[in-house]
Image (tube, rainbow, N blue to C red; front, side, top):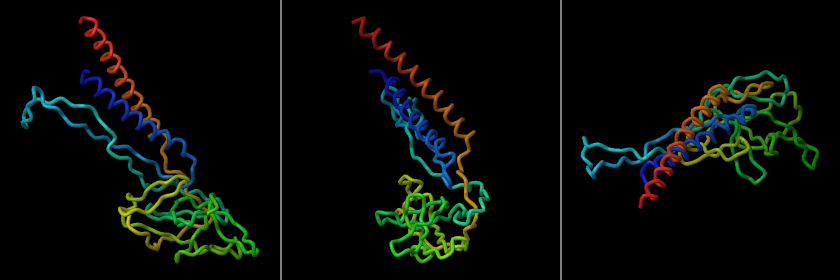
Length: 234
């Protein structure tokens, strides 16, 4: 099989992955506190022409691949809602901590909180998924008066780029991110952070990926026709 077939196939797969990331960003353009992802590419190994591997020898590429997908922790715009249970974070490296229903502590930028009532009649602060919002000491927040500013904990990480997305607008700490530490950043009550997705940038990324995919698809088609022609001559 011709090298062009494999090169074009690798490029098409990479462009498809790029479109998937941009499409997911667009789908979350209205998700509160959402941080977009971006794709970076890397070349596959080069092959020396006629087997030569010297520094100055002629080489041919073998396509590209997705190197990594990074979350861009840029600040989203802060919208005033005047809702007492809404909180916004004015810093990119700051997160709310939530103890999820499975007992796992995860982190989010979405400060659209709610009240949940316990069996004993007391109320505590929860997120949209029902997880308990934690204070600065890692304890669930009991609410006596929802109009008062609650002691919502704010946490930061040594390397927020090491955080892992796990769905439902949650992030998990990893070895790369380090452990969460209490932050001096103060949450803003009565406000919410909008999604940081720039729709124009994502549409541009989609168009570029579609053009790249179409080009690779044409190369695949030409390689297939060429292979059929060669086989018919045998």
